[in-house]
Amino acid sequence: MLLCNRDDPIVVVGADTLGLSTAYHLVLRGWTNVTCLDRHALPSEASAGHDLNKIFRTEYANPRYAALAKEARDAWKTPLFSPTYHEGGYVFCISGKLTAATANFESAVANSAALGTPMTALEKPDDFKHLAPQLSGPMDGWRGVHIPSSGWTHARQALELIGAEAKRLGVKLVDGPRGGMKKLIVEDGAVVEVRTEDLTEHRAHRVVMCTGAWTDTFADAEGQIEALCWNIVHFQLTPDEELGYMFEPDTERNLLKPTSGRTRPISTPRCKSQHATDDIPAEAQEKFMREAAPELAERQFVYQRLCWDGDSPDADFLICEHPQTKGLVIATEDQDMAVQSARRASELMNCLGTTK
View 1 (cartoon, one colour):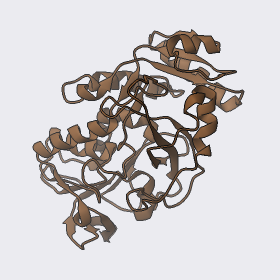
View 2 (view 1 turned 90 degrees about the horizontal axis):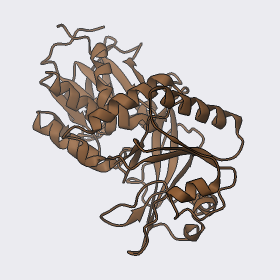
View 3 (view 1 turned 135 degrees about the vertical axis):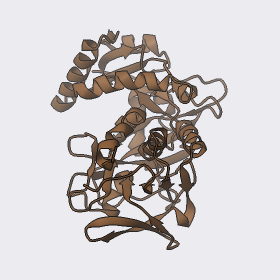
């Protein structure tokens, strides 16, 4: 591993949740020459974090992540992030009889309970509707728990805040053609440069790839990252509607965001910003909404996109130096864990090989 001095140039590719968090924590810890590249202006439209909201929860089947989430909750209550954090409670539930989903649910609840998280069991449809009367669907077979100490974060606002703070602390944020990565330049087995779409040469002693579902486009992840996506749509609510299914409505524009399951993995994702006519079929959400809030099942979307996720086979973090290229650090995660990123950037310090 190449050693890295605090003033050596470090280039972070990708101004997503993990990329901005990495750049921010690097300068916070004393690195003085950090550049963050992205094709899109802040907040990056390609980022899974470019969204109204993301769930913050402590319920994970992996006990390490349950403990991490509990720790991360403190970070979200600090002055920088607290405007984006809303502890309004969270309903964690399943429906149907899928063995894998049931096992994951039960492990996650047990891990959270072991950490002392208060929760209330929800065992029948009326239990859910008592908490959220707006849920008017049949909800047959649903069961879950209500966790008052969880909630949601305003994901896009968090990107804006951490990006602005990183810039104030000295991170060079570069977007547009000068920020859109074209290829890595490798010499003698070590990365030395990121070349962007306008052929700008960003020299680097370390390159940290926070490119999520696009990682395999630029570097061989050796089958450890899959490009998956979620369907994201927004419904416009009327001023009299106070429905809060999945998330509370956006307070500025009264938008409601439900979401549904992932697609199968593919090799190269498509970004809404570059393919504006890409749509999500109405039936992708209709069954989901008929089960929970039938009155919205036929309401037209006012916004839709695929939310891309660079997922590992075990849904774990992947943060390491690339085994074939010195100085190239791959850093990605399941977007479901993105809200924990603010406390995980320190994992990169071992990959940077500092001299002190």
